[in-house]
Amino acid sequence: MNFEINWDIVWPILALQAVLAVTALISLARTATEAVRGPKWMWVLVIIAGNLAGSIAYFVGGRRDA
View 1 (cartoon, rainbow, N blue to C red):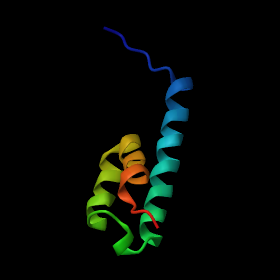
View 2: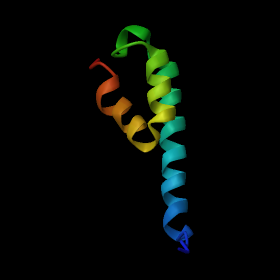
View 3: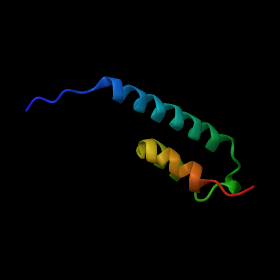
């Protein structure tokens, strides 16, 4: 089997993942501990290991309402 990677599709997804992860980590670092659901170290792992879904999960459910 010979698989070819279509880099025209992969690069934008990788760029989006990187931008979201960096944005989520900066947001997490700037957010007070009391304003985060769960421990911050857990969210760092979710953001890094969860790829695109981890960053989205942080923005959707990781921060408490102000």
